Image 1 (cartoon, rainbow, N blue to C red):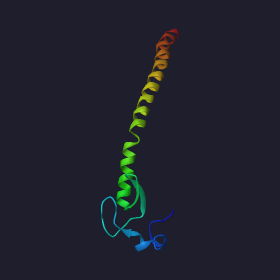
Image 2 (spheres, rainbow, N blue to C red; image 1 turned 30 degrees about the vertical axis):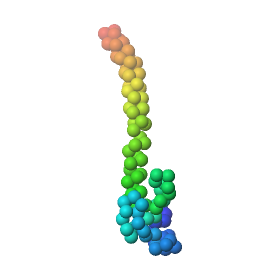
Image 3 (cartoon, rainbow, N blue to C red; image 1 turned 135 degrees about the vertical axis):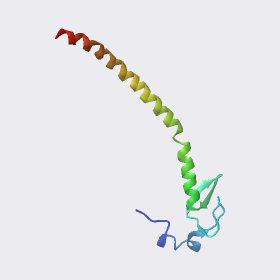
Image 4 (cartoon, rainbow, N blue to C red; image 1 turned 90 degrees about the horizontal axis):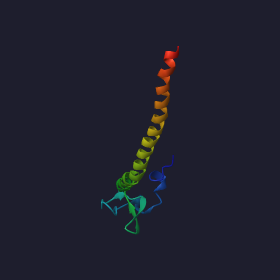
Length: 97
């Protein structure tokens, strides 16, 4: 797996990739992640990058979860109806024996 944000990969950067985070304002922290914030591309720290990803994940799947919840309910209703019909016919066959 790639290790782009540590070691020899950041030695070529000014101050070895350290600076002030544009979001949290921490100083002398590795700012190695470029993100677009308010229309500008800025360098941010690892913690702010993770926070932005977590926020995006929480917002994105909300509509997909609702659609997925409705589909199994419809499938369950469709599978229950045929199951009831053979069950009603089964007792009629049993007394014939």
